[in-house]
Length: 187
Image 1 (cartoon, rainbow, N blue to C red):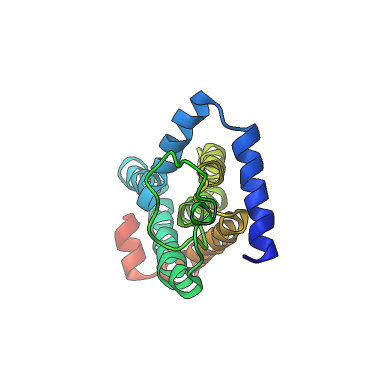
Image 2: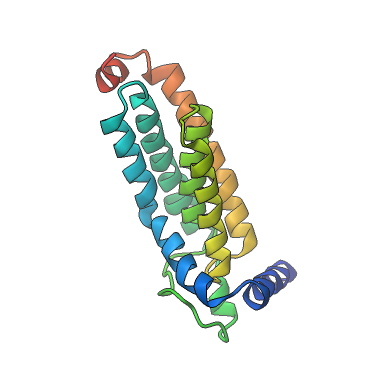
C-alpha cells in the first residue's frame, strides 16, 4: 500500500472515530443514496424542465452535465484508473451500505452532484445554494461511509465542476441558438 493511501485511510479513520453518531449513521446512507445514479439531480432537472418556462435551458444543461460526468468519470476514469475501495484495505470497517462493486476513483456521486450544482450556480437558478450544500453533503457522505478515499472525492469534485462548466459552455455556444435548442426550450 502506498503512502498516499495510508494517509487517506488515516483521514477516513479519523472521520469514523470523531464524526460517527447514531443519527448520522442513519442520515448519511440516505444522503448518499440521493446521489445513486445521479437520481436526485435527474429528478431536479426534469422538475425544472416541467415546472419552469423561463429556465428550461437550465434543466437541459443539468442533464448534459450529468451525461458528461457519466462518460468521463464512470466510463473512462473509473475503468482506466481501477483504484481499489478503502474498505477493501481496512477490513475492520463495518459498512453502513452495501459495498459498491465499481472502482473507487473518482467518486461518481461527487462528480454528478457537482456537475449539476455547477450548472445551477452558473445559470443562477434560485435554489443553487441549497443544491451546492446537498452536493457537499453527498460528497462528505462518501467519506463518512468509508467507500471513497479523500482524493476520490476531490477528483470527483474537480471532474464535476469541469463537466458543469463544459455543459453550460456547449449549451451557450452551440445548442442555445441552434434549431434543436430553440425547439427544446420553446423559444
